Image (cartoon, helix red, strand yellow):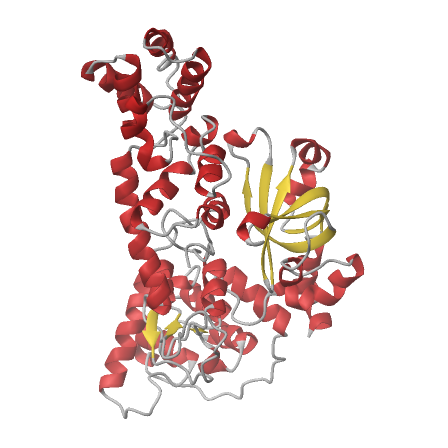
Length: 490
């Protein structure tokens, strides 16, 4: 699972950089995870350690040591220094540092980016290695690697602690994906991915995600009885039959107060204890409002989220019923007024999708790009699923919602964008010259179309793929049409 970069939501190895590294490094034991955690950091990247390590791990380059005396410090990482402790060992073994000097070097590396922190050690390192017979090229290259650690590098002990959490997180995601999703949603905001991406990934792993519902949802996201599931597919990588469904909690409803959510659950429990098991705790939206003492803002939030659908029928009717709930004087608090409910048009699928994103951050129906696909066809774009089979070097076009934009300092002006459509994610690389040409589109677009060249790393069996952008178009107006002209998409 880790080797395929199936790690959405996993601590430390869920970022795009980590997911690009995983199929190349292919961890097979715990110590491989320790290296994985540490190597995707500015220090090793700036120090030029990443590619030499990967070449040696893949058997493309011989593992060599300039002297046997430093082999004990570098053997566990194929001759490439990755951890702060290794730098300290090399300084002592190859440059004659005392233990105290090596610790001073460690403190300088730990004071990331402090001006002048490591430069004062250059002469001591290089001259010490030359005096012991090392070549100047090797000594200067080693100090360049040490300077890289000044841009943020990990101690081995720190990486090992993180790697343990990585393994535990991966085990839970692999064997208990429903519980993994519920826990992540209850811990928001956190991590690299928004709830929509976490839910999409869980659904791809066979987990059913159920909507917020005032008649069953708790405050937090919870697990429910598993749905009826089809027979096991022999082609699947794992059998997730029998996994619980995830019920979205009231904590997913934007605008709903925490006090209102708790009162709702308490009122429902009190009603359930005094009623027949098969009945509903609340008869109407007004009944719910009075039993849970919900104010207008809480009721409007619930209506927008779709949590009142079982009581009202659909979102439009729920908004109508919420508008009809009026504060009453004490004398009339328990009174009920029977009036015919007008027949309101049911929202279109597009309107429901827009409301889901606005209210709970998770689409309960189809992905927006599925509705827009006929309109995107005029631009001859391919889906993420189709692009996975493209050969490297082929011209390609893709459209998707922008889920991430990154411009790391180590990338020298290169921008990394992740797009999402109804079939998966597409990784975009935007070189600095393209960034300058399409800056407004790249920074502003919510729905982006990219024309470029497809890249596929053959060393990973095509698991690491990118679209190198040559032209970028902002098609965000199509998303606006979902809301303003949504009946055209019904």
